[in-house]
Each structure stands twice: as structure tokens, then as C-alpha cells.
Image 1 (cartoon, one colour):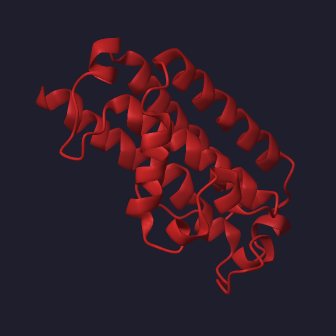
Image 2 (cartoon, rainbow, N blue to C red):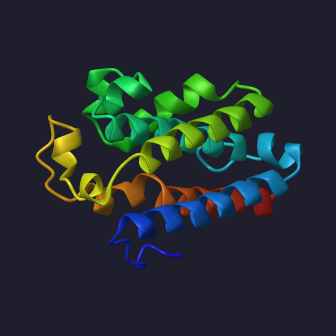
Image 3 (tube, one colour):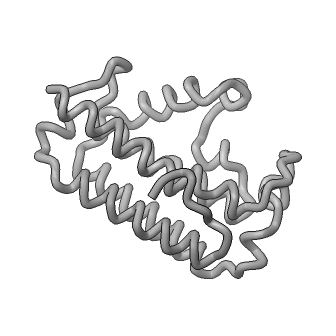
Length: 170
């Protein structure tokens, strides 16, 4: 499943979300603990850091679906939020880098369950409302269903690739 796959309906989104999630979770659960916590990438991130990053952004996606501030859900200072993604991700990394692996995995699963519960309560019409309907500060008119895969399905795939690069390099 790639970024070229069309996600046009609620069922498409839920199916691809389930597939992407299962692939991501199965992959990270297949890795021995030492591969998750010891080797790092050029930025100093371990596989565990990538996993908690995905978990944190699932919190942001849930906030979006609930019409709440993603910045507040992630507890990112406004001056950092207004920059590009790197400083935001650096705050997330610093905040959680010492979290034990079992807690990281528990957080990942719980955050995903909360996101799924909310998505399963939403209608096709809800998902075709514009992004700015959910984030009133935004002027982004893309339908939520066009935007959400970047925060979920594609995000899982990106981080799975980056985790693989870390663990296969060492």
C-alpha cells in the first residue's frame, strides 16, 4: 500500500488504516528489544523513538477528529508549533526518549485504539468535511479523508522504513 493508493471512502480509509497499522505493529513487534532501543539513526533516534513518535502523532490525529487543538494535544509551545516539523518532532523525541519500551508499546496500542474508536463513530459525511471544519484556525479546504492518511497510514509506512534502516544497518 503506497501513497498512490486512492482513499476515497470511509471504507477505503478504514481498510488501509487497518492494513498499514497491522504491518507496522507486526514489524516492530518482530524486532528484539535490543534492536528497538540500542541502534540509532543519524539524528540519534532509536526504533523505540520512532514508535513513540507515531504514538504521539496518533494523539494529534485524535485531537483533530475531535475538533481539538493538535498543538495542545501534543503539548507543544506555540513558538515551536509555528515552525516546521523538525522542532516539533525534537520536542516529542526529547520528552519521550527515556520512556521504557513496554510503556512505549502500551502507549502506541492505546493511542491507536482511541483513534480507531473515534474513526468508527464517524460517518462518510464527517470524513468528507474540510480539514478547517475540524481545525478552525486553518484555511485548509481539503477533505479530512484526503488529509488523514498522511497522519496515519503513510506515517506508519514512513516510520517502518526508517526503523528498518536503523535495525538493518547495525
